[in-house]
Length: 145
Image (cartoon, rainbow, N blue to C red; front, side, top):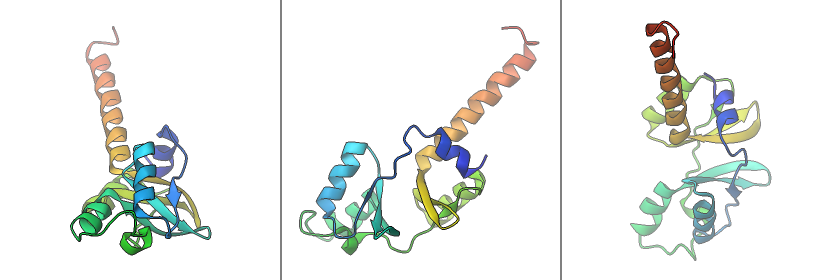
């Protein structure tokens, strides 16, 4: 399976983003409203970084900063790891595991087209396994339900 198919299977195709000048508080409000664990940081149409719950926990809370006076730019992850739309699911899993990350921005060439999370990957794997199990059960029972 390719990343393209994962994006197509997601229920939401909107890219939620903030600018680097957004306060951490406002970014957290958006993340809470949309039930997402990270938000992309886009400035002047270009991906500048990603801000995640992990960034908040490690760079705000533990350092005694205040989310209403700190901008996303001060704490976002700017050294981004991305994936291409035609790369395989296994590649995404390997990247996420090797780099200890939970979100991957997805590009089609030079165009940002979405983001996948470890949750998206796990859901695809679970659904594939359910389908495989049902097929094997059907085969074993001789096609009789």
